[in-house]
Amino acid sequence: MENFTEKDIDVFCRASFFKGLSREIISNLFVAGKVVTFPKNTFVSSIGDNFGTVLFVISGLLRVSVGSSSGRRITFLLVKTAEPYNLLGPYLDPSRFLEAQTLENTRCLEITSKNYLDFVERHPIIIHNILRWIGMGLDCANSRLLDLMEKKVEDRILRVLSTLHNKFGSPLLFTSQEISEIAGTTPESTLRTMGLLRQMGIISTQRGKIWIHDSAALKDTEFGRLTI
Amino acid sequence: MENFTEKDIDVFCRASFFKGLSREIISNLFVAGKVVTFPKNTFVSSIGDNFGTVLFVISGLLRVSVGSSSGRRITFLLVKTAEPYNLLGPYLDPSRFLEAQTLENTRCLEITSKNYLDFVERHPIIIHNILRWIGMGLDCANSRLLDLMEKKVEDRILRVLSTLHNKFGSPLLFTSQEISEIAGTTPESTLRTMGLLRQMGIISTQRGKIWIHDSAALKDTEFGRLTI
DNA sequence: CGCGATGTTGAGATGCCTCAAATTCTGTGG
DNA sequence: CCACAGAATTTGAGGCATCTCAACATCGCG
Figure 1 (cartoon, rainbow over the protein chains, first blue to last red):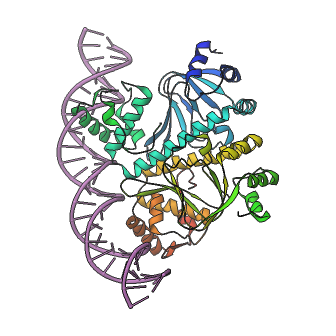
Figure 2 (figure 1 turned 180 degrees about the horizontal axis):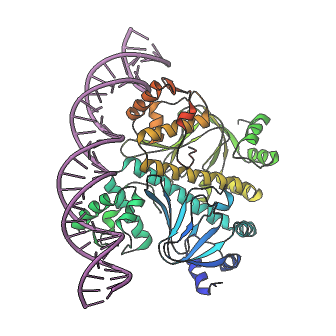
Figure 3 (figure 1 turned 90 degrees about the horizontal axis):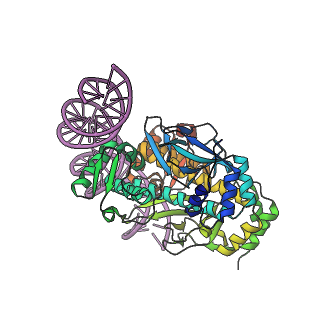
């Protein structure tokens, strides 16, 4: 069985999700769960497997998506260090339709449904963090709806690049495939747009890598914040 | 100042949102708030007004939407009797971008941010209801993203009609304008599709009214549940 | 009765997907 | 170290779904 270090706790303490929580509470969270490592490209949960466990990524990256009947995949969420996955799972009918896959080797803190419910009961302060997080997720989903309904592909790709830049810095380690699954378009359209941006000197690219030079040029014009 | 009746409480007791809560708790909720009536077409909250109040619709109907710069409007949510609006508002940075408007004369139970937070603290059991509701909202938003990304307009309109039928029965009292603002399309496309459905005998229409005869024909094929 | 909102239908414009072919990169195994 | 397979990128051309615009019919309300 793997173990966690004080350093892992430090990282969580500084993270946005855990804002306002004491170090003691966060330690207790680690105690309530166990650390698991998934190799790259593992499916952490699949559709219909009644996944009720809550995960916190310690290192690595998790992609939450859904594969549709037409063979297309849509990415809802990218979960990075110190971010939670399936926060609401233990409270919901577990027949949800998302799947989660690791994009790198990923260490997670895994907490069973029961332990999670107990933990929340014993530390109700964390409810504020949960509700804040979910609220942001909801706003993000609504923003994406707005974008899909009324923005053109180029604008959406711009937004996605800007958002990913905020979250992951530069360079971005994503292929056009992955960008397009977030923006809701095809790899071809993504590459065409990125070609233009390259000509304008706003970004430069290499296979699987995107450097953003002029992040201001990607800035969103409309209200509504994406999180991804 | 308006008042509530035992009958109002009864209605809430039977509603989906309040499942598992005792009559006493629901009574307390009424005591913590006050009853307000808004005339038809009133803006209950507008963009940028830092609306932190929580509402429960007692009778009438609320439309939660956002108007974009291009003059188009997109409907996120329809709130009917015994459903909540702005459940997360008191927990979030209040600069959200939604607006809520009454579609009929609407009586609401209005609870200030402070009273709401107190109430949740004193009756933590309601947290389960809140999380369940928000979770469904999140799943619904994700389903709509999926639909927008890969379904054609006709399918989306079908889905919207089916969903509205589940929620409001028949006939539906909506114009093509309102349907299109939910489905993410134009009134023209909506009317063309409804014209086809009419020819097939699945629905019949009158100005502002839609009767659904064959609800099975509208049934969704894919996973993922809409709520609206 | 007339005005504004809604419904109806058509034709044209267009953004984007789809398909296809060629090129470049990366990692793997001989 | 090289050859090769597979994946990612690049670019072009064609087609299609849907929006847009426009004209007209209809309904309901004051």
